[in-house]
Image (tube, rainbow, N blue to C red):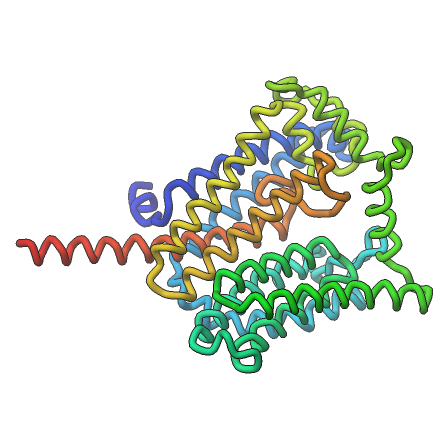
Length: 388
């Protein structure tokens, strides 16, 4: 055990955040799935608790092994990951498992498990964009040589994700745009990127109207209309139940396991788990969760500023930005500041592939942090030797 702790490096605050969010996840998932597990598994209310515990345990192992890998290796596999993501996303759109008219999952044969290919694509894209930004700094202001090699992969991946999962595509695109801004991409290119994305969305709606194959576009329109409507009867059912949960929680909450909204709120263990947390732990508990994600971002900014190499700096900041933006969007949906989406709360919501790839992202951030610490340690040793 001592040897394992000795080999565990990286930012200790980020490690603390990981364990804190994992503990919150176990409490929230157990509370929100107890009655569901009782109905589906003949009284075994702990079924989903043990399932989430096993996934989180695997996730922590992934974080550990990923942070032991030299982060420069991720630059080498970025191209392969990006190229593999394209056929996976195409296959998912054509043959993936459908839920609510959305094809987001593929089922693995033999083991009969499903996972979202967009999770792989997000991680691969951030590694690839970070690699390109670090390699193109000398020509970053050149549209053809600097900007196109960065923006084309973003457009391809977001375009393939968008038909089935608009919210994830927008999250990924905005995170990449923010990373490009930090990477000194000219503002005129970024505004052009925004205009191109808006044009792509409008084109999708136009095609849906002309062909009659509305698919998910009808769902998106309904969600935006219900969000902007001032009529009480237009408020979605899940939003109503979420507001009831938040109002019932008050400042300090009803206490662990005392949620009542879990019996009425759709997907209280994933899309609306923050509402359950607010009901059971109150505004105070919700503030702690928000603070944990913001602290993760602040520590990643610290790593970005101290990292001596551009790839590691862009990679750590890009991965943390997308995790924090996803968390903020999830919270905003739960408190009705944004239209309803299918975004989960990273490392807290019940899940399989989402927890695994979130853990891998955090492991990569800690890998960069580990090498920053080692570089600082070598500088200190060198300065002591010079002084002696």
